[in-house]
Length: 218
Image (cartoon, rainbow, N blue to C red):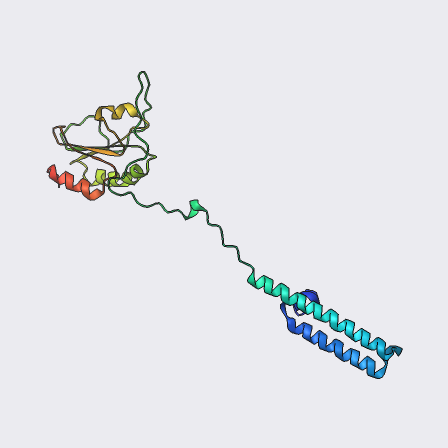
């Protein structure tokens, strides 16, 4: 019986050359015994021939199993293929990082598509407040990284600063008066509606806060 459940004896010998040595020794003892006792009415010459055949067969089997074992141990193992999509990590946007695609150009007679108005956007103000407008798109990497910052500023400065966002890809006509060259672009206005500063690219939250302080909002 094979010690590995149900595996043939020759398969075990590939992994255990000691078993082949045992077979070789047993075959040699059997041949010697047949030669000395003349078992099965065989002459001495026939017994020697049988012993030689058994020794040769056992030797060839051992050599073959040893060679296969060496080949298997030296065979290169295939390294797992890593999907570039799965391994790729999205780094946070850096200050000044731009969207690789330029803002759309409005053609004559073209009707722009108006996207949903973001929360906190107030078209008509009853109170004059400083205002910042971020002109970008919801599919731009730097713009998407800006989205949570704008939402935080909108909540933290509610009633003190108007924080607006315009998707110039969905509504290119709305961004036309600002004459932007790239997205995202942030335009800052004082309480009188006069532009005081603009910035192109990703802008960290700390820079928004510093600019608000310059406008007298703390």
